[in-house]
Amino acid sequence: MINPKKLFLLVLLAVSSTTAVLAQKLTADIPAAYKNDTTYAFLDSTFGHRIPASIRVVGLGDVAYTAAEPVDFSKHMIQYLVEKKGFRTILLPRNNWGMRRLNHYLTSNAASNADIEVMLVKEVTKNTIHNTREFAALLGWIKVYNLRHVNDPVILKGMNFFPPPTIIYLMSRYIMPHDSLRGIEMMKGWSTKLRNDTFALAQVQQWAADKAAIHARQPWYQELTDDLENIGNCKKWMLNENMYNGQVFFDSCMARQAVAATADEKKTIIWGDNEMISRIKLHKQQEGKNFGLLLTDMQTPFYSILTDFSGKANIHLISENKFGPAERSAGKASAAYLLKLKYPDNGGILFPDDFTRLQVPPLFNIIDIYGQDVTYSTSDPIKPFDALVLFTSLTPTSFLNQ
Image (cartoon, rainbow, N blue to C red; front, side):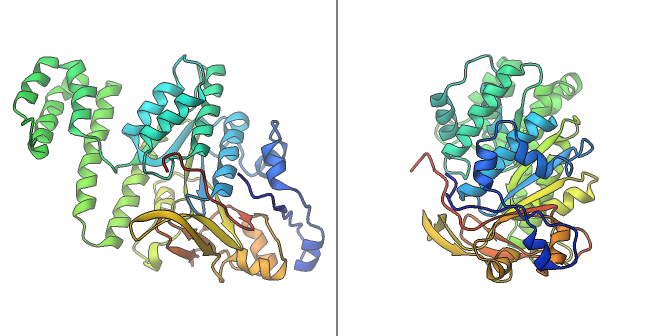
């Protein structure tokens, strides 16, 4: 749940004096404004003119995946973008083969059922950042929306190659429905005690090659091709001993998946963390571009909304191979922290021009699932983000499997 502390929207008027700007700011209780407004008036007044019809992709970045406030804000932004801006695809940093089961439920004629939604989230996202009540609630909202818009549904897509689909999944989803005799023959050669996945994968790849001439344009065959590509990318990534190079490869693969996912020209929301949704160089290395910069290079411009905090983050993280409560503080170089020193209990929504007026750098925090907290910036002329939503403190999301 959102922390009851008030957040204030910084509506920064175009005046030269920082003091005058802040004196004229419009204050608003942001949680109450967007949580209870079914007409989305607050979000529309803030972002409506900044996200015109020409914007096809919007990125939502969470400062920490396990923080309730950014997740809740992103959920309401998704609802606003779907209802008022016509967005229909939601891309997540998850494997696409797992998302298919969720989509089957979301696009079916079955009535919305909160128990089923929780069960699906538990099974499909077990041991991941999306295994939360907040994500289950978002699925419930999408399900109800889709039942009212059966000819124009919202769908989920994954762009992560890890974990890759299993051989059994490939067999049951593709080979058995389309070539059961060949599937039975292949499985006879696989040991029931110790199956050689390399040998089995080679057989699946050969089967796919044999069917290409006939089925290449079929949707199921395109899914199979994507799955096999993801298996190959996962293998390359796991064999890469250099962590930095591995991250660059990981982001480049996800960027290509995102570009492919937007090829149908449906308006797309990409929901990830700040490092992913910003436009930055990884670890200050000029040759290493993050997901956001890569996406921009691939001629897929997007509107980037990040989140941040100025005080304490009491969230869940992995430490010493254990997942549990932890506390982190905002980086002292971040814009959120510096603004707190000037204006206690600050919060709000900032845009690129505001940082010059406020005389703070556009630096933002990132806390990964392992508790590594970094303050990022960029020396590039390109904007690292288009909007930064500030919270004073962070509380944990509600995980389902605990």
